Amino acid sequence: MACDQLATEEIADYSTPMKRYKAKYIVSGHTTLTDAVLSVDAGVVMDVAPGPFDEDLGNVAIVPGIVNAHSHAFQRMIRGRTEYLAKDRPQEDFWSWRTQMYAAAASLDPVTIRAVARMTFLEMLMSGVTSVGEFHYIHHQPDGTPYAEPNTLAHAVIDAARSVGLRIHLLGVAYQRGGYDRPASLSQSRFIDRSLHTYLRRTEALALHYSDDTAIQVGFAPHSIRAVPRDWLEGIAARAKDTGQVIHIHACEQQRELAESRAEYGLEPIELLEQSGILGTKTTLVHATHLNAISIELIAEYGCTVCACPTTERNLGDGFLPVQPLLAQRVPISLGSDSHAQINLWEDARLVEYHERLREERRNIIAAHHGTWFGDGRERLETADLLWPLLNQHGADCLDQNTGRLERGTWADFCVIDLDDLSLAGTTAESLKSDLVFSLSPSAIHSVYVNGTPIVDERRHPDTQQIIRDYQQVMGRFS
Image 1 (spheres, rainbow, N blue to C red):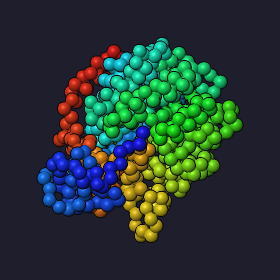
Image 2: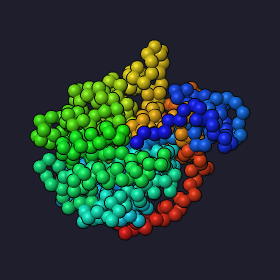
Image 3: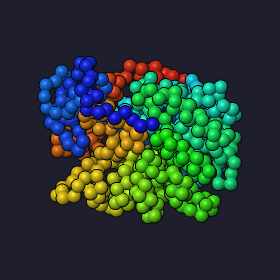
């Protein structure tokens, strides 16, 4: 569902009083402005420039809100609970981790999934996230029977995000089977739709329900080529093309997926997605850790985004994002916290660079691709300038949201960052982005605004204690 793009004449019609915030620094586009003013009216950015102000926020930086493009909120439940090696299971990998994740999924009902999601979304907010792409695949009752209202659990997750204050793009997951030549297991019953028609009808009903709320969007998410056969991929691609909704899909996360794709289709996964009609400018490929040159060329040709989740990928042992060839082909990269082993997208951004340094045994690796997002001809380029759009702009674009930037006409979603925080003290206009990307601790997030409204103020959210208590009750029963 396309986001609302506000025309200049529409902006000028707002009659409510404008709020103008002065800050030591404001990051707008590629520029860091000093002693500038962010003007907000009716939840929309009106201007970013020096001028009169209503409130001087002091020694702070105002930056666009972080966009978390890929989340499974319920998986926060197993944080810390899979970090061991059992005597009878000496080899651990993604597939053994998945067994424990399924146990968490089986334990939830509409009340508890909301409580868990609220905890996850609160932690996101406290780290500066203002929008989330929630890849939601727990749809039904534990035995696979649909709820009387088929979207009961989706409504609970959406309500969790909005009650905390986040924007949400609910990516409704299609799941049909257990994998190549494998039916769904009992542990996957809650994910499975009986037919493609059932999935499309349920997803469209959800989109219609929230069609008047710009803070809530609904998109399509075929889980993966192992969980969705070719005819489902083709049907989802066709429907998304008709409606203009986004498609997000796990792709090339593990080597086993590539092997099964070759066995079933005689194709690499990305080649299958191209033939199925999935690839396009509104398509995001999540993880993409195992790509060959032809696959990367296809991703670039069709204008897809890749969503990297470095913390999860290193936690699960998935592999490294092939960032250099992706950047060389000008493929936009967004970020997600995925399984929530840690929620800190600032850390994920720096990992994109740090993983390359470890592989190459050099420094400032991705700056070699400076022509990707900026023009050539610079004598010096901060590595942070390449990483910056991964935190905001590219995530907003892949979620089809009018945010991720502080420019006239965008939604007023932004963070106020305390420059006196231990992690940032001494920063300058020239070093600000580098300090934010490579050094910021979430403790520096002073305030978070969504749609021009302060959701986190002075490092406090009004519902924090209740959210923690509710979550602890759920975890007490789960343990």
